[in-house]
Amino acid sequence: MLDSLKESGKKISHEIGRAWDTLSEGWREMSSRSSNALTHFIHGKEEKHPKGSLLAPFPRWSLLAGEVEETEKEIVVRLELPGMQKGDCQITVDGNVLYVSGEKHAERSGRDSTYHVMERAYGSFQRTIALPRNVFADQAKASYKNGVMTVRLPKANGEKSHDIPVS
Image 1: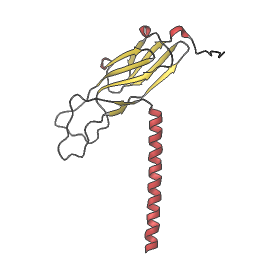
Image 2: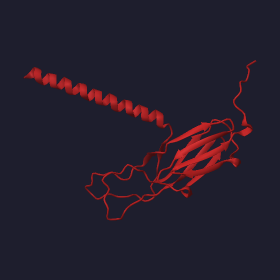
Image 3: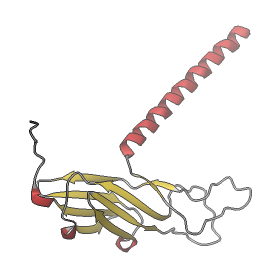
Image 4: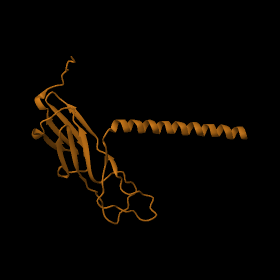
């Protein structure tokens, strides 16, 4: 009986180790791929859940996934902003940094409803995106379609990078 118990303990330990490895691998991949996409949302007025509820308050962190693409003439930034309207965002360029800020508003059916799953974050946010080149900020154009904001920034001087010889 003791041998059977030891063998069960080894199997359980092995399965826990495998689960931990899978979880760790998933976290590392999400962390590396999300880069700066993990965005902090600040709530103006906290939503409270009834006492004794197992539910946490609204999440404070969410992914605002984006991409930065460089063409011969411009830098194109696309940022997923699901559930938002174009008027909910402000865009600023300062040097080689694009700032997107705004507020995502909660959509609720009614005050007498109860959430059983709450994975979407709401509130004000600011996302900072480093640009790979100098741009003409005054010539930038932004559009919003199907939850994706696209910002087109003409590259300053349209130059590609060039090597500088060391003497």
